[in-house]
Length: 201
Ligand SMILES: [Zn+2]
Image (cartoon, rainbow, N blue to C red; front, side, top):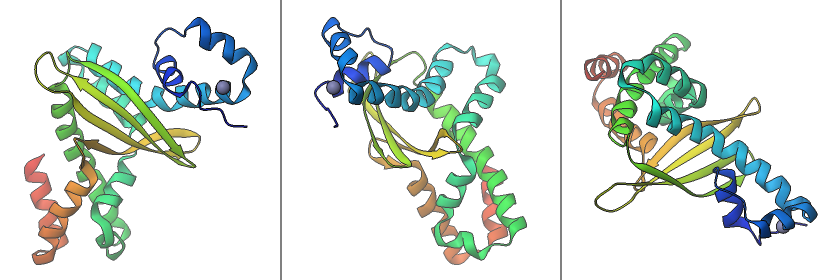
């Protein structure tokens, strides 16, 4: 039977905070909570690894950062989602080219954006799983000003949770790109789109 009694504490525990005596005692007798803790850990780990390396890495080591992000982000999935219905109209070669150009563009944008938050505290505030899909919710807490909500959408792929969208203050990165690309493709060819994306890299 599923037990939700310690849901918030389990999230904190999965995010690396100390587990209370109370919860520890409960975990010994509750299979549901033990399983949920393991599940939460697997989920949060995929986001935490990216966040930790961003926080700790010196700016000179962009390559290392890119490698970690490449392991945790499903760029091909994000590219396909960003193109929406146009994806199926492309040839295989065009799809491949689009994934390559999109990946470069996203890495650059995302790295710049996330690096701006580099020395700020990040809190895990929750997570939801629905079968093969999940959301990990975080808050960036700046020294001044309001916290910023950053949620990661993940999909289970080959036994690994991978990010396929990032939602910053309710704005989805994928949806944002999709409306930009749709606008361009309404009046221009695919090669025009690729050219414009390359100019922005
Ligand atoms: Zn329980």
